[in-house]
Length: 588
Image 1 (cartoon, rainbow, N blue to C red):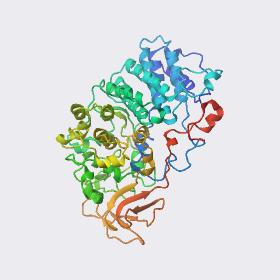
Image 2: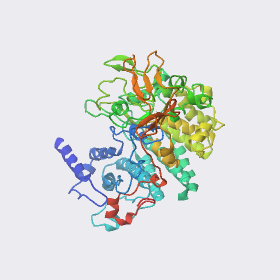
Image 3: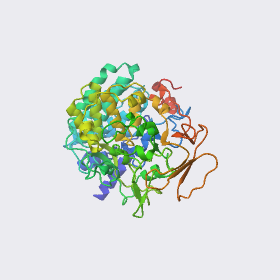
Image 4: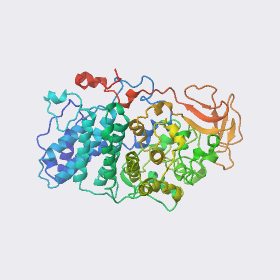
């Protein structure tokens, strides 16, 4: 048996050899060891999971490139003149060849339940193509392995993105019909319900893209895709929002558990210290030097409602509210997302009060969502072994709610089952959480540049923002809503500082930070953080919006948006191989 398994591993390595679209590995002499048995097909199918997000890169880093996160430096996507056909990446077709090879051979397999494995393969092909279409728009549709002398396919042009997405939808429907596993107690395997959940994500993205990117003239086709979201969400059973005895822990504990909570988590990568499989969540959020040092912005924090359901931004003095006051009596997700109030960490098991640390945060809104409270060894090494959530029930509820809002079909009961349920889990008063909104929030209308004015849609957008922060969806949301300008125009703003001097950020009687200009002052408070306030808007500096008072403004460097960035350029090296690919509009 061991020799047979070794043979299968070698065969898999040959089949999955790295390749460009025009680099085709030679098939092995026999595929019987794989396709002749269910065990062999299962072993091969495990290789498809490599398409899912890498736990060390993590979904929690993707929002670093968004309007809500102040970070160290500017990503190449937004840095002036940094993204070009020369620097563009992502035109990689290795996983597709691996999947198509499996599908072709599985169709001829004698294994009785081969359709289940083909369904799994087609699910992953749908994910592969969804990512390619998001990135590049038109792409070649290839559903068979390619012979090395098939120049008609190797050097063909690209297929229309809308035609490709129809193929993606066909793959998803086939997967849902044929994947045998309905659910999985470990939340680590692709099941029918996981495929349904991904379909809601993919169809929502496609519907919004068709509606708001009007230059493609596909607006009339968007409704069908919105309806697919609602239809598929309604087919998912067996999940609920995770709740703890104390709602002040229910949200955050989803993200710091080692074993996924299967009540809400639909798909996760379970990490394992014993197998040395880790992520770097603590280091990336807490270290002042490792990673992007992400901090949330004040404009984002303003979106959290008060616990009584009222809007924080309706208060006349909300713009001049200090940090210690603005985090009081707010949506409980806020204190489970950032350091505030009585938040504490532990050092070798000893609790230590931990206010926002300005040696680690630019804005004062310091994330804790994915981070262990224990400092050692997680802050200084990549040792996180908390489960890496990829899909959860809350997102399905949000996807359904947005589709209903877009269709103009949100009812009181549907609101209560989706947005209302999420808000009740966040501690918001039931009477307010379940109330269908009738007036548009002026703050949100202004934030979204007047593009969205429907009260229901705006509240869905608010809920999506606060519920899913640092789960890797925000960049795609801005793209599908055609709000790319927010990548550039959003303020990297932080807490309100009434005047230069020392401040107690968590009301424990101890000063935590000192803002100053000129020479650094002395302080009698051990461990206080000193923040030098710049007098100009120089890159890499913190200033205050009114000079010596006001909101913190962090300038990471120049950011540039242009509508051509809704699609990445086709890498020049690939166009040189195949000139029939052409280039996306606006890129030279």
